[in-house]
Image (cartoon, rainbow, N blue to C red; front, side, top):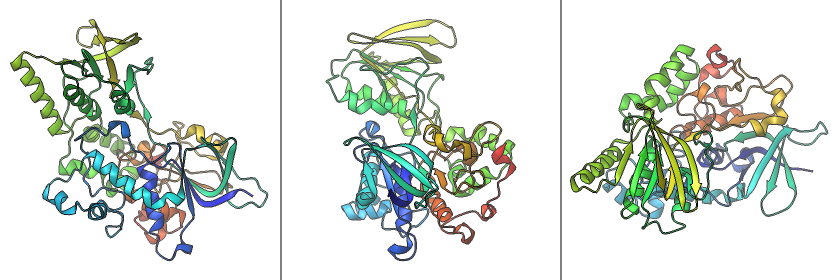
Length: 445
C-alpha cells in the first residue's frame, strides 16, 4: 500500500515552510493535526542562495516573517529566532526594520531545522493524479522521484499544496552558459573564479536585483567597467510609503479578489511600482553616488546604457559579446564582456505540467486560467474529491502579493483552515464572504 498523508506539499521554500508551522500550531494535541509530508528538489533548504549578497537587505519588514501576522505568539517568529541566537538586543539597537537577506535566510533555516522529519530533500514530484477507486486511502496520488535512488515512489494524500517557486526570466533567444548567467545563478558562478582582473562586465535589468548586482560587481571587480543595460531612462524608486504598502495587507487581498475587473486593473496600474522593476531608495542613491564620484575622478567605471535593451548575446572563448539596442535612436552597440548577468526577474509559478493528469477535472476561466477560490484551492468539477492548493501563481485572482513574502503567514493559515473545514469558524484568519464556497464574478472574468 502507498504511503499516506493528509497533506503533501510540493516544494519547500518559505511558503510551504510557513504552512508547516501553521499545521504544527493547529489547536489541540498532535493527533488532531493533519499529517503532512513535503518534497523538495534541492538537497537542502535554500532560498535564493545565489542572491545572498553581502549587506543586501530584505524589502519587507522583519515582522512579515513566517508566522507573526497569523500568530504573534508563535515560537517561530523572527524575534524568537533572534532571542534563540542571542542577537535580540543588538538587533533592536540597530534600529532597522529590515534585516539583511543573509540573516533572514538564517532565520528560515532555523525554522526548517525543527521539521526535518516532514521534509524529503532531493525529491522531485513528477505528477499528481486521481487515486484509483480501489479503497486505498487518499483522493490523490503523488508520484515522486529521488535523486539518490532508482525508480519512483507514490504517496497518497487527500490534499496537495503546490509551491514550486518562480521560473527565471531572460530575453527570448538568450541561452545561459558559462559566461551568460541569470541572477539565480550569480554568486555560485561569480565565486567559482577570480574576477579581480576582469575588464568589463554587463548587468541587464532595471529592478532591485539588477541594481544589487551592479553595485556588487562595481565593488568586487577591481577596475572593471560595469555596463548596466536598463530599458528605462534610469532606476525607478520603489514606493514603500504607508498607504501604498497596504496593498500587501490581508484586507487588500480580499478587496482584490472580490473586486471588479476595473478595480483589479487599478491595483496593477497604480501600485505595480511597490515591487516590480523598482529599486529601494537607499540602494538607488548609493549607485548614483558611485556614478557621481566616478565622473569626478575620471574613472567612469559605471556605464549606463539607458533606454536600451539586449537584442543579442553570444558566448565567446573567454567571455561573451552582447548587442545593445538604443530604444531612442535604434543604434546598436556591441560590447565584449567577461560575463553578463540578467537581473530580469522571474515568471510566475506554472503548475500546469504537474497537473496534466488531473487537468480534465479543473475549472478554468474564459482566458484559460485555473479558477481558484479565496482560500487558494483550485475549483474542480463535481466528483473530484481531492483538494489542490496553490501557493503562488495566483496574481490574477489574489493580487500583487501572491508570490511575495508579505502574506505568507496569513495565507498558510487560510489554507490550513480550508483543509480542516474551519473556514466558516474564521480560523485562523479567513474571509466570511468566501465561507459558503461561492465565487465572485470578477474571479472568473
